[in-house]
Amino acid sequence: MKKIQLLILVLFVVVAVRAQDGITVCHTPATEKFALLASNKDFNMAHADPLPYTHQSAVGKMITFKTPDGKEANAYFLQAKSKSNNWIFVFQEWWGLNDHIKREAESLYNALGNVNVLALDMYDGKVTDKREEAGQLMGGFKQDRGNAIVQGALSYAGKNAKIGTVGWCFGGGQSIQAALTVGKQAAACVMYYGMPEENVDRLKSLNCDVLNIWPTQDQWINKAVMDKFEANMKAAGKNLTIKSYDADHAFANPSNPKHNKEFTADANKHTVEFFKARLK
Image (cartoon, one colour):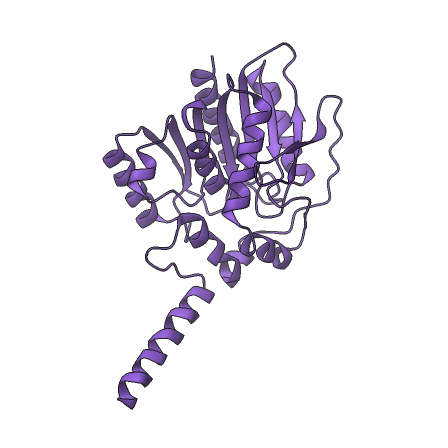
C-alpha cells in the first residue's frame, strides 16, 4: 500500500514540475498551455526587452468601454475617416498594450484604408518592458476576463461590425480566441505564432478564414503544433493559410528590437492583403 501511495506522489510531482517547465499537459485549454510557457527560461530569453518608444498620434486615442463581467476595459482606438463597419481588433504581445503595439495598430489603420482599429488592453492597464514581469503578467492572465474584454469591444463596435483580428505571440492565440468569441461577426483572423485552438468542436463554430504566420524554427509553436492545427482545421471544415518563414519565434514582434525586417515586411504584406480581401 505504501509503495502505491509513493508512486502516486511521484507521478504528481513529475506532472507539477513538467507544468512549471512549460511543458504542455493533455486536456489543458490552448491559452492555458501557452501561459505555462511563462515559467520556461528559454521562452523568456527568446524575447528581447523592447527599446524605449513613445507613440504620438493625431488620430489614435485611449478609450474605455463596459464589459459583461461588470467591469470596464481599455483600448487604443483609431476611428475610420468615414463611417465603416470594418473593424480590426489588435492583440498585444506578452508585454501588454505598449506604444509599439499602438504604432503597429496605426500602421494597419493607414495600410487598410477606411477601417476602425481597436488595440485591446488585455492586461487591464499593466505594461512592462522586463521579460520576467511579462512572464508573470502572461502567467496570471485569465481567459474569462479576456473573453469579456472582447465581448465588450464587440458591443462597442456594434451589431453590424465585421471583425478582423490579429496578434503576435500571446496575442496570436488571443486573435483566434477573439474570432471564436465574436461568432458570426468574425471576418478574418491573423495569428503570428500564437497557440492555436485545439478543440475541433469549437473550431467548427469559427466564422472566418485564418492566416497563420509561422516561423519554422519556433521551438514552442513548432511543427507538431502546426500539423495538429492544420488537421483540426481540416476536420472542422475551415480554411487555414500558412505562411512560413525560416525564422525563430518573435521574428515579427512589433516590440522586438531584433526583428527580421525582410520577413516582417513580407508577413505584413500578406496580413494587409488578407484583411483587404475579407473586409469589403
